[in-house]
Length: 97
Length: 153
Image 1 (tube, rainbow over the protein chains, first blue to last red):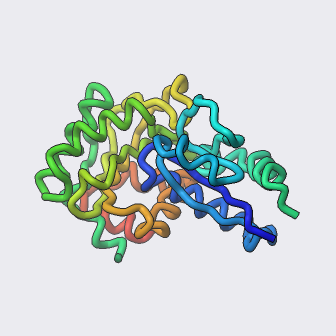
Image 2 (cartoon, rainbow over the protein chains, first blue to last red; image 1 turned 30 degrees about the vertical axis):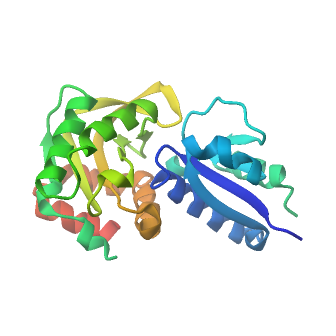
């Protein structure tokens, strides 16, 4: 089965998106989904051109432009509170089994 | 890269006072510039970024901000840290309507984020750690702050 593609975006693409991507990767691994998902990072400015290449977007920046895939707000991963509903949303949105 | 190489006593700014976030960002960026860590375009870039993509976050027991800018404005990676005498208002990352009263500011000058995954992930851990934030806030000298951070990061 081809891997699901998750794109994590932040303002600069060098700090928070990288931290959030790592956090999500670790949680998915813990839950046994590690080998089903490929996670990449980018800047919010790149989202419009890259969104069609992925299955789901998680972002730490405010983002309101309509794009072709679902966008989930991921700031909770930086705060460390309220992540459970978001991780469930990610698992469900990617259709991980 | 060793985390210790990113921490310099000259960039640990204790009990800093600032009128607002722009002034604080200018002060911190000027210290990074003086050390040759960043280019002279960094200060403007980091203020613009902060307006477009706010970096305030509610830490475990106090507000924190993590301003940063594109790698093109950075010569080599380092972290400047300011503990604030009085909280400075930032806006919350991803939720700009929400003000964050920052008491600690980590200014990230990163030449390449992916080289620092471990560090960034540990930094996020600090935000959620009440004891760690309190120790950072109460650090008495730049040297002590460096040693606290090198232990935490």
